[in-house]
Image 1: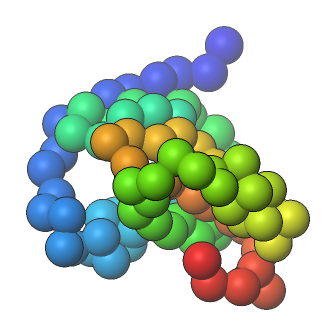
Image 2: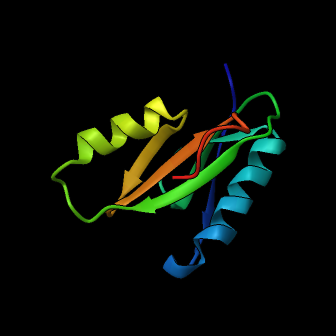
Image 3: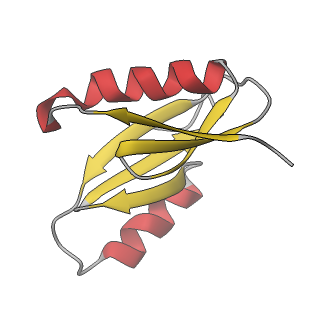
Length: 97
């Protein structure tokens, strides 16, 4: 059974690049995001070079098509929170969201 840990951390909405870098550092240490910002929960796994991206979508219309496009482009949606979409990929060639 793999370990889980949760970390309380606050980031400003305009500081998403800092949050993405922190999530990437956690993945390099073997902790992979599974849920929720503010109290970030991670599952222990193999250390990996992952890219994380956050994207804000306030509209629900067209969301399925948007998520399908992201998935087809190599991005896995981890979860969403208050309109923020959290994605990750291990691919160096996945286009930016």
